Length: 270
Image (cartoon, rainbow, N blue to C red; front, side):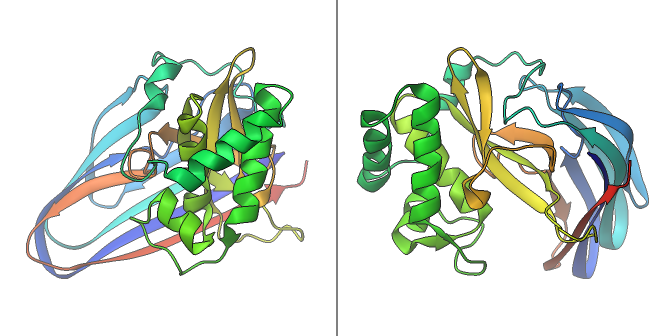
């Protein structure tokens, strides 16, 4: 599938700020499931800094904006050709050992309920892959998709107790469940094309990857009850949503920040 991306993030401030510094993880991953035809990331009036690939294979680029400033505008435009690998992250180069992703974070610490979901999935499974699918299905059943009931700092255990949440909560809950059973798991940020009629739409998305012996990293998206396919563009990964955030940074000054994000994907006729 040939997908075009238009992504704009605007940070607005109610009084002039002295400067801003950002770390951007807004570049498609390099693996067999996606091929970048064009990609451009810009920060309005910004100075591009150093870029590098971290141990997880994700490209990170630094930017700075000198003040006084009332807003910071980050734009992404590009075109990516994708293929369905049934969720398997084949051909992706990275240096971090999978065992590093067994460590809990505040957002992904499992409580008794999450541990029980994992134990039940393993007990009735026919192997690691089947268990992973069972965990993802159980999380999808336990947490109904409902925007607005959780927030950026909601933990996996809190979302499960609420029985509602968004894709971030589904991913955190699956990660917590898998790690509690000794399966390395991580958070993935990216885009999802889900429009039936081909029109652009809001498409920022997140899912989880579990490391399974014999397959490597495999993606699972409980929010949509599937594994990532040709509709997905993978950007980067981390221990949790905060660690994998596409944009991280700080603005110096006393102003209050307001965030506006628009993301649209469209399929190009081939």
